[in-house]
Image (cartoon, rainbow, N blue to C red; front, side):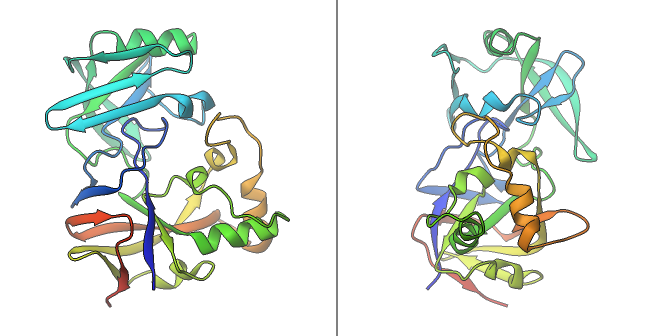
Length: 254
């Protein structure tokens, strides 16, 4: 039986993951996932690719009533009312996301940590700040296989790949065989698996420190060669919204 082993969301894109026991999933993805993002002084998106330590920024977010708490690597905490300032448009992987810069202490705290001017943006709508598709799915079987390739007996830490849904009970890369098909999680949520997930340099970073420690891309390509990218896990879109919880059964429905 295949079940949900863990759920991961990042309230602030590229910041530390939060692993709730239950989430609500709308047509645009998990409602609390990547609702905020960071930009530089000229409005460009800033992620772990540029600042690996962002993974050390711990974010706690609730949507109703709306509250955000950031804890910076040096221990500084910013928790204020979410007051919006200027409207901005930010390029994300070939499309534009719209949002408003948060005024107050958010930007100054991030800027002090980075040593360069940064600002925190609240996306106008949930689900604008995904990479290619709103949901990512990965199996523990695939992590275990990658560990074997690396010469380890233990599986890789799933947080390194930042999947929304980490599944238990699958064979290695079984999720690849579901592309084009749909899975149901729990009583109602239905996802359509659309594309293999092309991995980037963020997966080479330690998920706690953001420091580069393992060449995961080389490891993936060593046994899954592909001329386009190091594919690992799959992307999905939401066909039917619903609730999902750790331990829910996952069924291939078509």
